[in-house]
Length: 231
Image 1: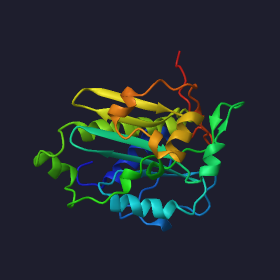
Image 2: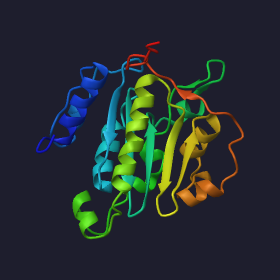
Image 3: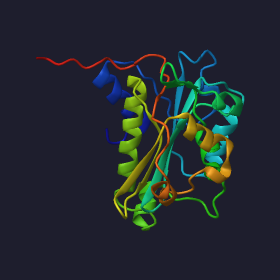
Image 4: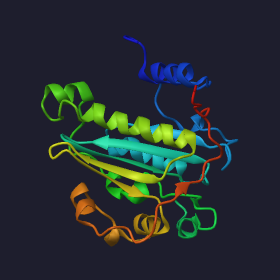
């Protein structure tokens, strides 16, 4: 793996592990990379692991005119804390009617930049690379690896059609982690009311328990083959 682009290495690993045919592009994000033929039944999955508000604004702008055919999975972290957020819609009207209670599914979730607008803020100075950040002691030694593991779990859940949370917040200094279940209460909270949003992991730990049960984001179909018990 040494010397190869991370996108290529990860795609090859998933292909080898699950027999799929993921492709990779080694280059800067551009909206033309997103398939125009995607639909709610054959979605694009965009994983953002960028370090700046400018890069996230580029992603958000590219998704502004799309429907729910692009799922954006975003990850970010500071020195010892971070968050992972997944969503597929800017449409507040659709978000208010997202949950199909009879089917126990949600058709859309707020995009990361709608759920947490602070992601789009500009930095006061250019952010160093992850390796530089560790060297300069502005990023903890293990936070990057921890966040990557959570993103991997989200990806696995999504491909299996088993995603039941939309956000995960981590505080390594206290070894705390909390996730936000997918339900209409939380969809409304993170898409229509800025005052009701949790702004940090501390807010989430202090919040009252959700009053409604969790449900799943509607999958097109399980992409990964189901594991079978060899016995």
